[in-house]
Every structure is written in C-alpha cells, then in structure tokens.
Amino acid sequence: MCSIEDVPNEVDVKIKSITKKCIKCKSTPTILIRHSTYCKQCFQHAFVGKFRKNMDKLRSVNSKGEKVMVGFSGGPSSSRAMLQLLSDYNEVLPNEISKKPLFSEVLVCHIDESSIFGLDDSDDHDVILSQVEQVAQNYNYSFIGLQIDDIYSPDYTSNGSYNKVLEVTFDKSKQQDIDELHAKICQQETSTKKKLQSLLDGVSKFTAKEDLAWHLKQCLLINTARKNGCTKLLLGDCSTRLSIKIISLTSKGRGFSLPLETSGLNSSFGDVTIVRPMKDMLSKEIGIYNKFQGFEATIISSLTSMMPPKSSIDRLTEEFIVKLERDFPSTVSTISRTAAKLTPPEFIDSDNRCIICLMPYQKDDKIWQSRITVMTTPSSSTIVKIQNSTSENSIINSSTCSGAATCCSSDCCTSKDLNICSLTDFLCYACRINMRDINSITLPPYVSEDVQKRSGRENLKKSIEEYFLNDDD
Image (tube, rainbow, N blue to C red; front, side, top):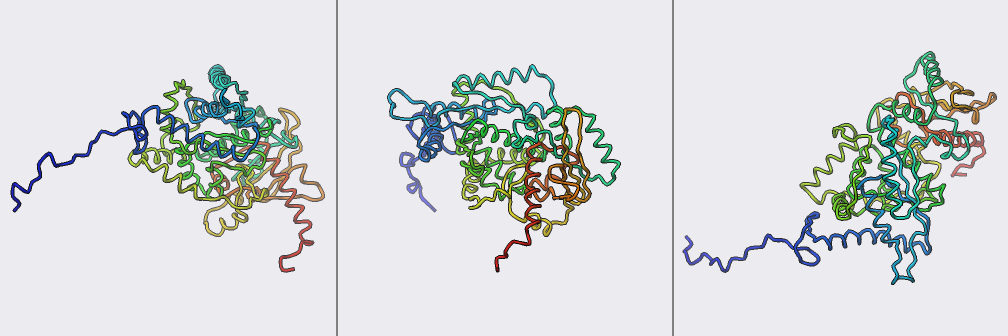
C-alpha cells in the first residue's frame, strides 16, 4: 500500500490550461477552424494568403495581363468572396507602381437558372439579376447576364446549325408512338424556355437532371469566355464543394475525368483554362469571411433546394460530408489532398470527348461496360433524330432512321448513302448510365453539331479504312 507521503502535493501537479490562444499572435481567439484558433485579424491574413498563393502560380506562368471571366453564382457564396479577393489582388497600390496587374480585364458572368424550375415571375428574376449586376459594378467589372435556356440560342453554336435539335427517344417500339410524339413536338411552342423545360421533363431522376443542368452551365460559361476573348475562367469551387464532387463523381463513374473536374488548373479545353483559386478554403472559412465583409445575402435556389438528402447522389453526398466534417474536422482536407494526388491522362484525344459533358473519356469504354455489366444499355432501344427547323413553329427535313441508337440528318445522310452512327459511342460512361433515366429529350444544338461532325468523321474513316497500314506493317 502506498503511504500518504507518496501522494504529490497540489503545488507540484501541472494542470494544462484549457484556454487557447490565437496560433499566430497568441491573443484571445474568436474563430475555430478545424483544430486551430484565430483572432479576426490573423484569420483574414491566413485566408487571403491562401488565395494569393494560388494566384501567384498564375503570375509565374504569364508575363502580361490577360482577360479573364469569373463565374458568379450570386449571394454570399465562395464566388462572392472570390470577387473581393480578386479585386484586392489585382489592384495596384500607389507604392507598387512597378507591379503590373495580373489581369488586364475582368468579366463577371451570371447564369440565371430560374427556367429550370419553370418559374414565370419575371419581377423576382429582374430583382435578383439587378442585385447580382450591382455587385459586379461595385468592382467596375463588366457584367454578362445569361439565362440557362440560352444554350438553345444561335450564339452558342459554331457552324450555324442552331435550328437543329437532337431528339432522343427511348423505349418506343411502335412507329405510331413515334409519329404521335413528332406531332406533339410540331404543335409545341419552340421557344428556348420550352425546349429547356422539355429537356428536363424527359429526365426522371434528379441525379441525371443535376448533371445535365451543370453540363449546360459549363458549356455556356466556356463558350461565353471564348466569345469574349477570355483565356481564363475562374470558378469559386471551395475545398468543401470539391470534396463533395470527388465522392459524388466517383460514385457516378466519372473517375477518368475526375482529376480535371476537381483540379485547381484545368487546361484541357485548350484556349480557355479553368482556374479554381478557392480550392484550399473551407465553406466555413468563406462564410466567416463573407460575414466580416458584410456581404448581403441573395437567396438563389438550385435544383435540389429544400429537397431531402436522398433526392440525388450529389445531395446525399453533401449531407454525408457535411455531417462527417462536424465530428471529424479533417474529413474535407483528407479527401481533397488524396484526390490532388490523381493526375489527368498525359494525352487527351479531342476526338474522345463526351458530346454532353464535354469531358474526355477512355477509348472503347463501351466495350468494357458491356463486358462487365448485365444491364440493357440504352443503345438497345433508342431512336435518335436530328431535325432541321427553318422557322419557330415548323419542323421539316426530318428523317426516321431504323435500327438502334441511330442518328440521321440531311447534312450527313444522302439518298445514295445512308450514314448511321451510334449515339452511345459519343458518350462517356457516366452520361451513358444517366441515359437509363431518360424517356424522351431534345438535346441542345451543340450536341447536334458534335454528333454531325464526329459521325461524318467516323464514316469517312470507315470508307478509307482499307487503305490504312497496320502496326505490324
């Protein structure tokens, strides 16, 4: 037994203080990020430092100012914080006359998604649009306001075939059903909003709808940046958002393009490089910074706003990551750093890009899919038609192609030689899987353009295939 003398005195016992201090200046902290505490000044210094570090990487590559475009979602979001940080970074102070601005001109682009929800209250849309435009004007940036249904306008086509739409119909075994569908389409108003609503109405699952809506937005942003001569497209994806995308993209079969869709610098589009300078910031950090800056809130709904977690894969992944981050604060950083080790393919073949999501995909992945799956692929019962409409209310020069997953157009087919191509051959694995949830859709003109171009190239390749030399030769 131990004696009383063996017990140490209270004076000798060292009790660790539970009072934490700012890890930078050792003052009283007010902010807890992960396991670190900051005061207000040190937090802002560290937050701005992360952004400037990512932007300095661009400065080392470019010797002169460039014209860039910022994708601005609106509201107190990460893109709102990015505008403020970008303005401070690009500003030349009086004592820095020798310093040149990184960007010569900055454009702000906002895409209104109200057409997705079928809302017709234009007054509310005008108020939100004016609020978003005012934010851009506060920084003296040029503002570009778009509607998501503008994807059907002639401004976002390259060869003038904006009046052609690609109609995809599944599970239509009877010719009578197809004829009734065509008659219904001919009677419909062919405005861009109607076309977009028809597109989304033909998608049964919210996961496929969310993917399709994002692909349309991405195509609009890239083409708008390209039209305005911008070499960089800045997106406000933060670390929390990217970690959610990493898990959801993996679960949806987008592992091949994942390094490009979540990297801080994506130059796979050639003339337009996608930059994500907020990739190292948590959504909590951005929220605190926006509060300190006093940014007013603008409520902008998304496709799954107020929806239960199980409504889509992205929504379920968001719920999972956010809840896990509360108990394990290193969750987001672990996912992001792990995915950062992934590298995109060394050579990206421009011919192997998905016609919907515009992302590269593995060659012959359709053969791999048919070998490992037991499901019926969409190509077994698909009829695809490209319709050429010369006016708003009429559809002419439409041809019906027999066979599965066929594409026909007056531009690529003649009476002497009927060229048939498979739509699923031009889709990545994830978009092909989403086709299972599609009943009948009218894809945008940019898809029709790509199908015509690639089908013509494939048919030309087949016609001269006999003259090619084998590797053995």
